[in-house]
Image (cartoon, rainbow, N blue to C red; front, side, top):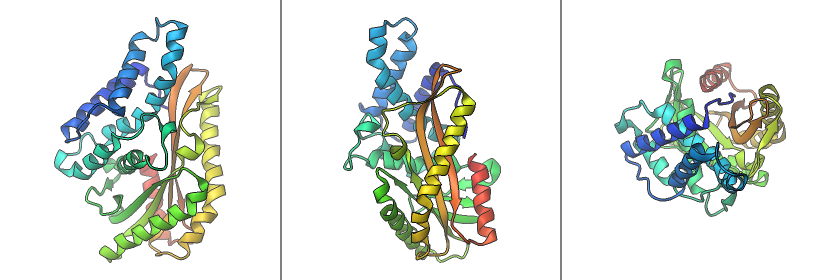
Length: 296
């Protein structure tokens, strides 16, 4: 996990470039949350040094929320911006659906999660696309997303949790979907992975994690990851015991807005981790090590 150190100006510039790239691959950007974020961050960048306390207090909540949201779009753009447009049809479709939804993550309901669900799928594909490390996104995957690692296709189903009560049901549904993908092509080289976003469990979107310095912040993020795996791994292991042995484990992800007080800067801290299923083959364990190394 890394803590981004870009200035607000640079983040705003990257987001403008991300929106331009999205349009270039066929995503229609209309008035909605993406445009709202651009306006809010642009206003903050332009005015925050001279704004009155009242003006700053009025815009600050929307600014924090916007900074949190735009980083996913920026991450997808930075990873996939060099991929030829014809290869990005599935990513463009996900992004098109992802530009909708409530402006603030905290305002999501069980009926309005679809947009950010699609962004998570695109984000997984982007995060793992590391051609320089011989790990590639499988843009033609019939699962939520897919990867090619060590010559093997890995079908991934992505779930965003809003409650730990729904963990087992979501893992079971993801495994069923992966098994369907594996049946469509019975190659012995194919594998499966369940990706779970715990962001809404960690932070509904209306809080900031505050630590005195970067070291303490990194340590806290690692502790949160360890707690997630310790608390939840028995749930997904219970499901994996009854499912196809080619399903190798769980990709864990979460993000939160945070402040490192020593730098007096609001940042988006995110973490990715892979928890291998118990007793998998050594070759499959090595495949997950290769993927984890590429995603760092």
